[in-house]
Image 1: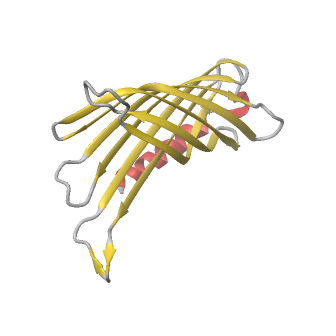
Image 2: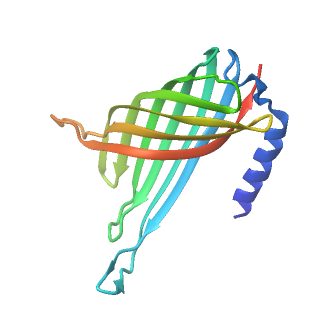
Length: 187
């Protein structure tokens, strides 16, 4: 809890130094991301299971506007999950290039569309797999004050984590709603 509070206070201090007035202009930088945690415990016939399934995800994002509205981003996305009654946890990583177009309207709401393409992999005990994954999505970015950013969107991602020698894709198709916050740095 202390680390979370320290991170939040540090972010607030940094936000005070940044400037969102240049958001979306060539040369500006977006630093954002999202974090998620979930835990679920099965209940059957009124009896609660003794173990829970947990998932922790973190997806930081950095984007650089190469021209007004067009952003070239990088999103490393890490997931650690542990299923109930399974010994080994599963670690999955996704390293995405994330080009996006931001519709620079008047006001503080910025709709965007984004593509995702990159390398993915996982490990769970002695099992490993990797592949090329891709997807896309869209949403809105809301500029708050002079430097803060709230980001929300819907993404569809085809994840490939095929083991070596697999003749067909092994992975998942995911539809996700993601929300997070960030800061904007001008030139």
